[in-house]
Image (cartoon, rainbow, N blue to C red; front, side, top):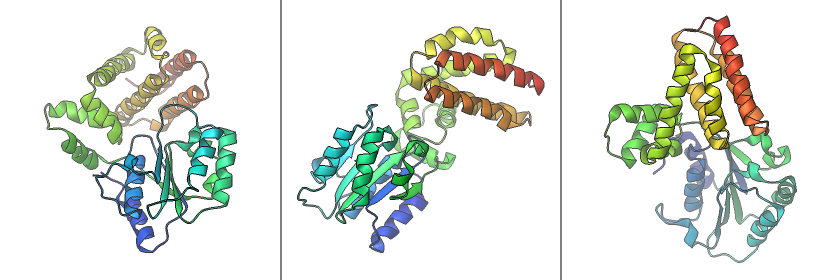
Length: 293
């Protein structure tokens, strides 16, 4: 079952009904909000496959998940070659998750395939960072923008995967997930992950209280060992900031700009610990200037 994204699903259904299926789609939006789930469901629909069927059993459907590696030219060439083989289903489908992982060589090779589309092949692509994708690729695909789920949709998702135990804790998880069912699922079922979030909340709330940024540095040393942990920390900082700044009627944009800038620098492989230390110092200056309590 898919939660949210009704507008996007309706557009895809209209493409089927009107026999207007594109040779390539790009689903854009934050990671973990369900883009790849919608893509797999669309692959089932256009081939008349039961909604519960495992797509991996079909040789005409190739799934390239994101295991953290870059997509190199050899892999893309092999995927494209596979589309020329005989098929049993109505359409051959190639699903690629997070295509921003393509190297420049791979992207150029993939572009050539898009320039000579096969009417019996459909590429279903997702990305959480469209700025890293060649404009020439984007211009040759049908783009659908996806948004995070709202609270009601997240609550429905939570009800579908678990029975409510501690409602206050579940509400906290829903807030931390920031509209992403994948993150909510992990918070519910991975106690180590939820404990990590609870620890981050304590660290940040203490910092908001006393603004002693030097006390954060040992924690930054620990965080810097895992880039994803750092991004989770910055995202949570942004969420907690929204609650605090909004409550005190201050300019949210001033504070969030610091976090967005820190995220960009870390993605650009600038020293993580130094980025976090600089963020905490700039945060303190700004907090004092607006007299945040």
